Every structure is written in structure tokens, then in C-alpha cells.
Length: 157
Length: 402
Image 1 (cartoon, rainbow over the protein chains, first blue to last red):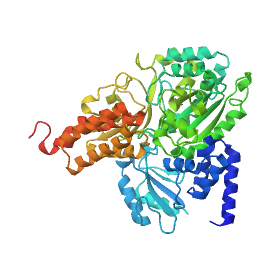
Image 2 (cartoon, rainbow over the protein chains, first blue to last red):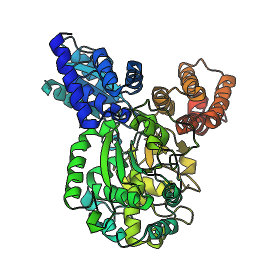
Image 3 (cartoon, rainbow over the protein chains, first blue to last red):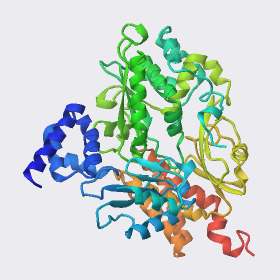
Image 4 (cartoon, chains in turn green, blue):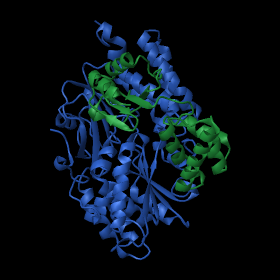
């Protein structure tokens, strides 16, 4: 990581501290902002957050490792999450996943070589009445067919 | 026909209500009056556990502290549940007015909506809604001109952990820790968020409260049965023509609900989500009620073409994924139960082992620290018992043999 990048990230994290406060209860909202912007929370970011909140970096890491939506390793620019819970499962989740896997040339849990997309399973997205459902970043799509899902993926940048 | 706010009907939640009505009412009455109406309504928490709301608020109101909190639990993670999504999109006035009523009743000035990370796309519209409420003085200082009535709401975004729906795990994550449940007692009503008295209520409970303070506890308790008053929102999904959210009075029969949603050829109904129980055809005359089949509202319907072992495997994979790993019965137990399901799938099981696993399930129900591990064996036990013919004996024509 370049020094200028580090400085930029430090400044960014300080702005979150200004927004949410320096109490530990601000931790998850801060991590959420970093995750949203960078798609992962790097070791350096974890250390900065810990320093500014005055807690040990391992405390930050322990929280990141607990939550499904937070990760310390980089993922693709777009996160594709297919709901795997039963209502979506019985309405054709498998066909959806196979089509996406073929089209992107990756398996669930992997990232495309161009770093564009990471494919994952999600537990119940709360869209059981409109399954199968899938989320691309923070947008959700429902009543999908394999064809429609692949078309949606081709539109993301 | 798609269900929308225009054509939803129901006795309580979906009945007429205008934003601010409940708040306009409460500034004229005392806290005791609100608690009295709630007691008379016999409203129980709608998240699934069914704790009387009036008792929870009375205890929180009675706790002495300089600061108290009201948390609205919108961490709706139970598979097959999506009523909170509908309420937050179509009825935010009920949710937020209910929170204001709760804050007033227990003496909290700060409300927190804990929104699950999966619903991040609702965040913008909810925040805009709060801004409009502040503009109309339904939130903020001296609400509607009542001196000393201060209450504001902030929204906290979850990060994808099912266990954070458990109230103490939710509070842990609010405080910036791993979402691991605490030992109870102490309960949040005395030692909650930041160690202060905190009431954690389900979205639907707060919506019901808004109606109750406006229309009275007696009006509410007229609906439903003696022990289970009022109505319940059911999130219906699976094999039926009209999935969606339905409001029905407690005491409705399972078969009546199946007719209503256009379910045909139904083999099994999973009631209460993955952590609920699965009932076969022979029990469809049972009723939804705290005294019979209690539920947080998740109804998943499976028709004759579905493989129940596959359904069970999906549930157990979910629990292995979502167990927080803090206590041993849940962390190890769920893995063992999933292994058992895989053995049945591969034909490498023995009945002796499966029976041991059922015993293990019963141990988990009593020995786990929180509701996750206490209820995760439910589908394992109920599906293997209610569908044993399909799972173990189908090749030989059922229990009676050929």
C-alpha cells in the first residue's frame, strides 16, 4: 500500500469517526462504511479503526470475522449473493447458480479473474414470496430465471 | 393478484391508521393508562417467544436509570419470514409511531431500529421518513408541544448474522462486539444496551401497539382466542398460488390458511421457520395459537413433489452456518445433526445412531445458551418423526411393509 493511499484511508476513517463518534458502539457502522466502499476491510484499515476507537486491533478483527457481510480479504468489485434458503431453493436456486457459474466461469465462493464479480450464497434474504432471489451488492432481484440472472450480471460494471 | 397496501385487509395491523394518530393520543394520557390498555389487550411479543409486552414495558419503565433505550428488532433472519420487510416498506408509520409510544411508556429518549443488513436497500427511504417525522415534530424535543417528551430514532444496520435477532446478541452487536448472546439474567429490561435498561421489541409488536393505544385493549382482545389475542401476520411462501403476507386472527386453522393462499397437493407445512416444526397432513386441523402451534409467522408450504430430507438438510446447513459457536451444544450439535442427515442421504446410517442424534437434539434444546441452539433441533426431530415413512421406508411401501 502506498503512503498516499494509507493517508487517504486514514482520513476517510477519521471522517467516519466524526460521523459516528469514537465510542466502541460506533464500530459496526464504521466497518460497514469501509466495507461498502472498499469491498473489504484491510489490515491497515483495521489498525486505524482500532487506534481511533482506542481498542486492540484483534477486537476489530474478531468482529469482522463474526459477521457474514464483513471480510478482511479483498473480493470482486461486485458481490453477487444467491439466496440458498429453502423457499428459493425449491423454486430453482440450483439452475440459477449453475447458469451464473457457467457464465462467469467460476464456482460459488470464487472471484472472476478480472476481479469484477464474487459469487456467494446468502442465507435467507427475506424475499421468500418472490424466489428465487439474488442480491448484487445492496440491490435485490426477485423471481429470477437463469436467463434473467445472467442478463443482470452482464449489466453490472 | 399481487398483494399491495391497497388491497391488504386485516383486523388489526392492516386496519386504518394515519401517521401520528397514536402519538396525538398518548400525549393526552399517562404512561399508566398505556400500560393498562396493553395489559388488557394481552398482547404478546410477535417475534416468536411470546413474552407479554405490557410486562416487558412495565419492568423497563420501573427500572431506575438516567438513560433507557427502546430497540425495534428488524433483524428478521428466520427463513421464510418477510413480514417486517412489508411493514417497513408499506407501513413505516406504524413501526415508528409504535416506537415513539414505547419510548414514552418506558421513559426512553432514544430508539434504535436494528435493520438487518440484507434490507440495506430500505435504509434510504426509512431515513427520509424519519426526517419528515422530525419536521412535523413527531420526533425530537417536546414532541407535539408536550414539554419533556423527547424521543428520537436512529437506524443501525446489521451485518448478516441470524443470531443477532436474539435480543442480547443484538445488543452485543450494537455495542460493537461479536454478536454472541449473553447469559440471561440479567435481562435487557435492567441491563441492556450500554448497561442501561432496554426494551427490545419486534416490528410487528410495535405496529400492534400503535393500534392498541388508539383503539383500546378491549378492541384488540376481541380478535383471536382467549389465550392468544389479536391477529398475526403470516409470511407465506413455498408451494402455493398466492405467497405473501397475510393477517389472520389467532385461532385460524392450518387448513384454512392453506385454502386462502391457494396451496394444492400439500404434503407438509413448516411452521415458525427453520427453527419451527414441520407438520404433516394429519395435523392440518391444528390451529395457530400460543396454546397450540405458536409461531413467529413463517409458513413454508411443501407439496407432494418435495423431498423432505432435502428440506431438512437445507435447514441444518443453515444452522451450522449461523450458529455463533459460543456454546458447545449448538456449535457441535448442529454439525452432528447435519452429518446424520447426510448419512441418511447416502444410506450409511443406522437407526441406533439416528436415535442417538434425536437424543442429542433434545439435549441441545435444554443445554444451549440461546434460542438458536434450543430450537435448531426442532426440524430434525419433527421431520424425521412426521415423515419417517418417506425417509426410511418408502422403498418398502411404508411402515406396514409391502
